[in-house]
Length: 346
Ligand SMILES: [Zn+2]
Image (cartoon, rainbow, N blue to C red; front, top):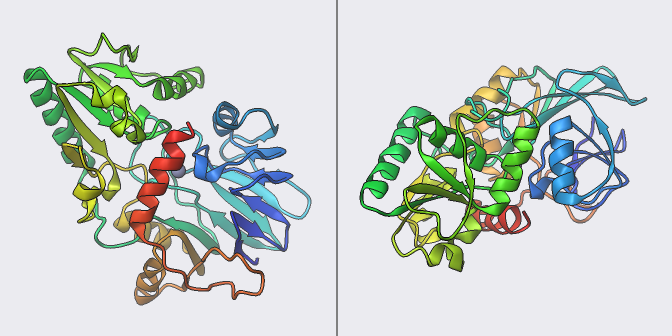
């Protein structure tokens, strides 16, 4: 099966679009983050992603499939498997002409307290994200990061400060909320986080306690969760005694303190697989061909050194460009992107 990346993943032999970045007649959606959706005419998605898609993009013709349900679309069959990235996030298995191709979308292999546990799906061709495909990004054990979060929140509260936790409105905010509720903290949510959290509840996610919608006059003794894009806005700037904690895998990048000015603590808490888990995913998929995307080209080279048949799939704007044209993308440019697109469009 040929695979192309032209403002989204495209399978030309089947005329199938996956996570297209612009409107299409029909598109398969892996999850509802804004860099994976657009105002399509019709979509194929899990029921959870379809609901979150409606919240963010409005109405569309929707075909839903639950995890593990295999459906025939004529020239190919399609099945979704959990990706552990946010609620409803899916890896997409396409079967055609005796070949199994899996597109991971964004994936997190570690347990996610508010999303389905990811699985590794055996396939011949694996198209995988590689956001943290650099040995620099080996995340510490979750329990260690959570303990650092709890200790920082305790310190801030006992110092009569407002702990402000910065996390994407969809996915990471709900993970942080549940982890904080499990420790009995009172939590206040920025409006965009509140809206998504209410949809999580509607979709059956049970949180370990009550939470409140943000009110300026009711912050004392509470933890505030807000999207990262808010950190320079009056809502947070006007909290005189604040302690700002950013949750991001980029915490391990040496430039992180400069990128996140005004943040007191940056914790390596991510909704993506770290380097070791990406390599494990490549190995356990048993894929004969691995195509990496959404990350640095060097991850494919690292996989080749480890004995995998791997190529980096670059965005190609011109049909005459070779399929695997190398294109350098700075990981920190993605930090800016995710701040901008994921948070402000919410
Ligand atoms: Zn995502």
